[in-house]
Amino acid sequence: MKQLNSFGIIPFTRGALTQLLRQYSSPNDKISSWLANGDIISLKKGLYVVSENYRKEKLNLEIIANQIYGPSYVSLDSALQFYGVIPEKVNVVTSVCTKRSKSFENGIGFFKYFGVNEKYAGIGIDSKSQDGIHYFLIATIEKALCDKVVFTKNLQLKSLKSAQRFFEDDLRTDFSGIENFNFQIIDQCCECGIKKNDLIIMAKYLKNIL
Image 1 (tube, helix red, strand yellow):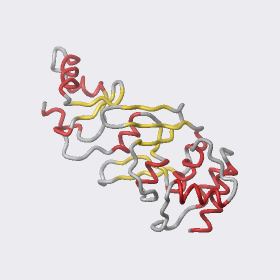
Image 2 (cartoon, one colour):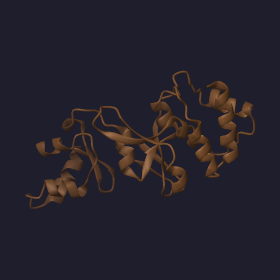
Image 3 (cartoon, helix red, strand yellow):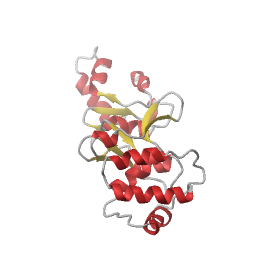
Image 4 (cartoon, helix red, strand yellow):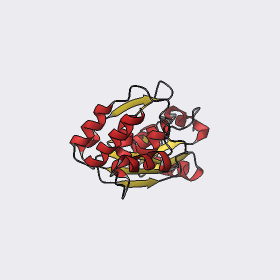
C-alpha cells in the first residue's frame, strides 16, 4: 500500500487509482478494500484523499473545497476566519461557485457552496498557500465581506448603524491587522447589481473605521 504515499494531501480521482492499480486483475475490489479499511476517504463520488497514515502533512480544507465542486473559491466565514477578521472557528467550509448552490458532507467535514453568476464570481479572487507548494483559490478580504453580505439571508443594511450591528455585534469582526484595503473590489461588486444598496452601506461603514 506504499503506492498511496504518492498522493500526499492532494485529492485524487478514481481514474488515478485505477491507473495506480493497473497491474491488479480486480482494481475495483482493491479500491473497495481501501475504502472499507479507511486507507482512503471518499470526498464525493469518484474523488478521494488518503488517510493520515499515508501523508506527512495535515489536510488543507481550502484545497479540498476547491476540488470537490467548482469552479469555486473559498469565501464568507471560512475566508474571514483565514484572514483573522472573525474570531470563531468555522465548522463549515464555505465557498462561492458559478454552479447551483450545493452542500457536501464527508469523512473530512462539511462543505457548502453558494452559487452566483460568473461576472460577480470573477471579482476579487486570490491564490494562497500555507506551505509554499500547494495553492488554493480564496476570496480577498474585500470580496469575502461582500459575499457575506450578499449571501446572508434576510440581511438588509439600511443604515450605518445596521452595518455596525452586523459587523461588530453579529460577526465580531476585527480589522486591526488589515492594511491597504481595496475599496475598488466592493465597487466592482456593486456594479453587478446584487444587493447593491447593502454593499454601498457596507463600504461607507468600512471607510469610517479603516
